[in-house]
Length: 292
Ligand SMILES: NC(=O)c1ccc[n+]([C@@H]2O[C@H](COP(=O)([O-])OP(=O)(O)OC[C@H]3O[C@@H](n4cnc5c(N)ncnc54)[C@H](O)[C@@H]3O)[C@@H](O)[C@H]2O)c1
Image (cartoon, rainbow, N blue to C red; front, side, top):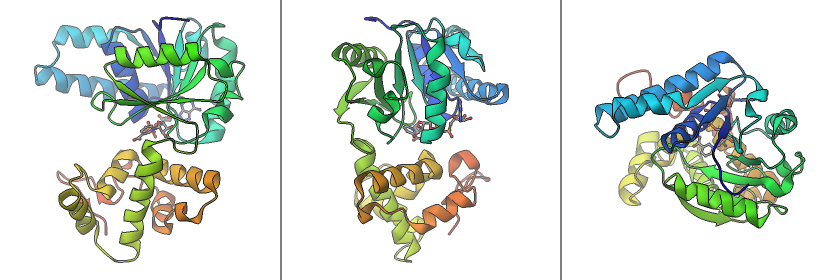
C-alpha cells in the first residue's frame, strides 16, 4: 500500500468524528462505524455542527460542506471496511474493547490494508499482536479537537514496517498535520508529560491547596497555558484521563503515576467532563461553573 484513498474510522465519539471530518475534508471517502446507529448518527451530527460553524465563519462554502458530508458513510457493519486502505480505530480507551474490535475487523480487510489506532496510551506492540498484520499496524495519535490541532504523534510498534510508517507519515502531512515520532512506551510523548500534570492538578484540588478556579487561573496566567489543567481534563474526558494514568501506573510500575482518588471518584460518579455535561465544571448553563 503506498497511497491511502479510502479510510475507515471506528468509534464515532469526539475523536472519531474529528478524524472522519478531517479525512473527508481532504477528499477521502470515509466509512464511519460505532456500536449502534444512534451513536453513528450522533457522530455525524457532531460533524454537521462543526462544519456548519466553518460555513458561518466563511472558512468553507455550503457546497464544500455538502461534499464533505457526502463522503462520510455511517455504518454498524464491519463488511463496509472491505475496500478501506486504512482503518483508524478511535473507540473508548479500553484495551479489551480495542482487542475485540481488531478481532472483528481483521477478517473483513484487504490483505494490504493498514490498521492505525488513535489510542492515547495503550501499547501499540500489544494491540498489533492481536491482529494478523503487526507490520501494517501503527499508532496514529491525533489531538483534540482534531480539525484544529496540528500534531499527529506517530508510534511504531516493534513490528511496524518502514513502508507502513512512510505511508502514514505522508498521509498525516496530506491531512495538514505535523508529525512527531514516539517510541512505543506507555502514553508515548504528549500524554507521558501532560497527564501527570493533570493528575497533579487533581491532587492539588483533592488536598485543598486550591479551588478549581484557582488552579486553572494559576496555570493559565502563571504558566501561560491556554487552558487550565482541570478545564483541559474535562475537555479530554475524565474516563480517558484515568485510563491513561492507569496505563502509566501499571506500565511503568512507579507510584508517582498513581491516579488521584478524586479523579477516580469523578469517573465513578459518571462526571466525565464536557461530554457528560459535568466534570470539574458544570456545563448545563451558558458559562461553565466549578463543581468544587
Ligand atoms: N479525548 C481526547 O482528548 C483524546 C485525544 C487523543 C486520543 N484520544 C483517544 O481516542 C479514543 C477515543 O476517545 P474519545 O475522546 O473520542 O472518546 P468518546 O467517549 O468520545 O468516544 C468513544 C466512542 O467509541 C465508541 N465505542 C465503544 N466501544 C466500541 C466498539 N466496540 N466498537 C465501536 N465503537 C465503540 C463509543 O460508542 C463512543 O462513541 C481513545 O482511545 C482515546 O484515548 C482521545
